[in-house]
Each structure stands twice: as C-alpha cells, then as structure tokens.
Image (tube, rainbow, N blue to C red):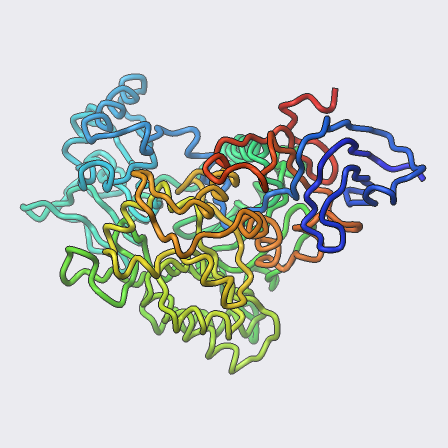
Length: 544
C-alpha cells in the first residue's frame, strides 16, 4: 500500500487510550492511516523525519475570533505590554495619526483601563492626540470602545447633545452631560454601523494574516463566535469570505462558524434560522456552520457582565443584560425548537442563570438528546450552577489565558470571596463535564501553549494566585485544547486524538509538553503544524 505521507522518528502523544504513544504516523486522504507496526511494509509519496521531536494532536480553540484577530493585526496595538499609561496611549494615537490623511480613521484595539490607572481614554483627549481625526479605540474585551468627536460626527451626531441612550448598552457622559467617548455593549453599534462591514477583499486578507499566525502557534481547528451581523461579526458576506479564503488556500485551519443571533429569522411557517433554512452542522471538514451565538451580558473586567451581586467597590453596579431576560428566553426557545445548537455568551452568574433557565425550558418543551448547548465564558458560577450545567449536558467554554492577561482586573472586580467561583476549570471536570480549551483571541493571546500554561499555573500578570483550586494537570489542559474542543463542536469522532481514521492534524513541539516543569510551558515553541497530514507551518524545515 502506498500512503500520501509518512511521519517517522517522532514521539507522538496520541491521547488515544488504546495507543497513548507512537513513533510513526501514516496519512492517507488527510486521515491517520496507521501508527507504528500498522505501517510496516508500506511506502509513501512523502516521508518526513521528525528528528525525535515531540508531537501532540493539533490544538483546537473552541472560541477564537480569527477574523477579528486579522483586522486587529492591522490596527494600533494598545494591549498591556505595548501601552502602560494613558499618556503612552495618547502618544501612540498621535504618532499613528501623523502618518494618515486628515480625514482618515485612527483605529486601535486592546487597551485595558484596569492597567491604565482605572481610567478609559476620553473623547476630548483623543481629539487632541489625533488632530481632530475620527478615532475608534476598542477595549480589550471588545465589549466597549472610545470614540473621538469627529467619529461621533461620522456616526451622524454633529451635535453631541443628540447622541441617544441605547438599550442594552451605555453612553458615557461628562459633567456637562455630553458623551465622554465611551460606548459600552450595544451602544457600540453607533460606531460599528459606520466602520462595518470591512471590504470583502480586506476581510479575506485579514483571515489569511491571522491564519498564518495561528498556524505558527499549532492551531489546526477553531470555532469563530459570531459571524455576520452583530457585535462580534462583520457583515452579510462573512461566510462567503471564509469560503473564499478556503478556495484560495489562505485559511490553513479547519473552521466552525457561529452565526450571530441577529442573522436568524423566520424561514417559512415552522422554521427559524438562516436563509433557505440553513442550520447547525452544514458544511464539511474544512468549513462548517456551528451553533448560533447569542449575547446575554457584557464583560467582567469592564464591569458590565450581569451579576447577582454588586461589583467590588461599586455599590449598585451589577452589570446588565444586553436584552431583557424574556427576549433571551424567547430566542433560545425558537432556536432550540428549530434544531440549532446555541452558544450563549454569559459571564456573570445572573446571566448564566437566565441562560440555564432558558435551556432547561427549551429541552423540556422539545427534547433533543445530545444537543450540547454551550455557555461561552461561563465566568462566574456558584456550586449549584456547576451541578446544573452538568445535569443539563451544557458545555461551558471558559478561557484559560484570561488568568494571566486579565486576572488581576477580574480579581479586583469580584473581591476575594466571589473570585473562588471565577473561571472554574477543575470544578467542571470534577462534575463530569467535558471541558474545552479556548482563548477568546484577540481579547487574549491566541497561542494554545500560553492557554495551557495558565490553566496549569493559575497566576495573574502580577504574579498573584488566581484560583489555585481550579488548576488543571498538563494532561487535562492538553485534552481540553484537543478532545474537549472537538466535543464542544460535535466533532470528537474525527478530531482530538491521533488514531486510525481520525484527521491527521498535529503540532510538533520544541520539548515534551507533558514532562517540562509547569512554569516552563509558556517557553515551548511550535516547530511544525500539520493539517490533514500537510505541513502548513514548518519552522524547523522538516519538509526539506
């Protein structure tokens, strides 16, 4: 028998209980044809010697905004480490503006007020820094942003007094009652309706740019939350852009796309979904439609997530739901009855309860075994909620990388007592829940090895312990980023392990992830990445 490829002299951690380790892997038709002695006597068109390198199944990010990542790679980078004060932020805006035409937008993303003295940028300061140009700076959470006066004018508000309040969001106001620039949650639509959609070709090129970076991080699959209309999407042609990226060989990973909830509508007398009745699961191994993405609340570090109790040091602030609880319930019931898997963004414990109520009612009204509705982030939960999530078969999708990048801000927002219920990991596993791995990139760094590092080490950027009782073992963290993420997308039958018949997706690492000291996980690098047995990243030159 002649195979497409043979990878030899490797040390494969397969995550397959029947054969946990292997040194050879054969590929035929993009799938694993066999391992070790199963390959005796076969030949292949391509033979790749891995030089004894360690190999793990390809990383799968269950919540990764690849398209947004691509656009932000083109913008001013305002993340911690690049900007450490408001003065430095304004200086970067000024520097970028100096190289642009007078009417060009200054776009930036990634600032975190928690790391800028607790203060957001202001409209008037941006006016000065940008020389009167339109400015839009998106918060690291993507749940808020700050606009300049010229930006408000382009939104249609030449008179700042005319900027309205927006249901499901807030418009920051100064002492005179005028907008101070800050727009949170649904109020961001005032800016986004001007800035979106990104032109089709630019959107495709952004996908390509982010995909190359992600391939170098070992990412072979991801789920994109919220394409199309809505806060996380771009526009009506988003799916077409991903299709074009696949056709042109620009999208190197396998993608599951979540349409945003505003894209679903009545399709006939008894249907609810996309045009032509398209629903969850349509597509193939490279590009498919996944759950519908629903926003229920906001951001924890932005203190807009809907909580059962006041935020630490902010009496009366419990965040907000982006829609009334009854509207969220009605959407869940309709989408569930029409066959959709649902992925609801819910960060605060109040929002989690609202969504769990809706899921339980929907399942009781229209029983659907194995539906695996999801709660994206599922950030703050009580013990009873963990048990309920397990009982209902819901998949929580928390982000490990938030621990170091956003952890200090989350601890400050919750206080020491309530922080024990923040971004649980081990509690979910102990309850019998299958846990996926995810980053929410570009909210946090998308490199899976960094996410695994944080899941294991549980330390914030300042070095403070985050939630040590929730720490995972390295094996548990690796399984989350492989088997767990495949399960969350109903793809565990073809992804997550390296066994005969599974997709030949894997990452070649610089050292043994399962053996290095925990504090060194973040220092590992990805030497090569294979999707379907084809190297889409090859820093070590294995293919030479």
